[in-house]
Length: 106
Image (cartoon, rainbow, N blue to C red; front, side):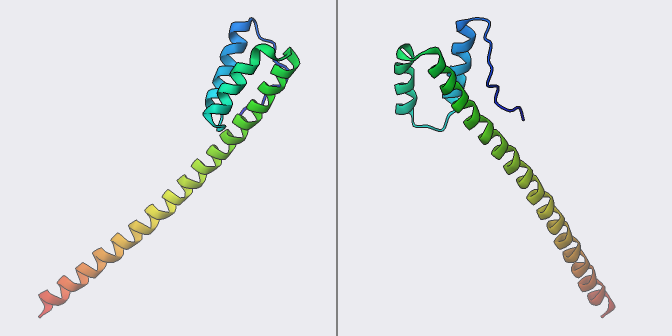
């Protein structure tokens, strides 16, 4: 995962706005708070906007890492469960074979 970039140099305001819109859309903050930030943007200094972007990037980065760890843990669990299911299937198959052999021997 990429770490937050604290030294953004946007080619233009449109790119900066798109980046900020993406971060706000991805944020876990309530919609009302997102809207409040959007309404405050025209009143904010460039430094305040940069700080907001930095905070949102840290949040996004943290959740990206957590998501990646969750997916890795989920994959491990899936592998473990598949192994256990395969063991149960083999045990069941052996039990059925033994039962059939006993019935045929009678």
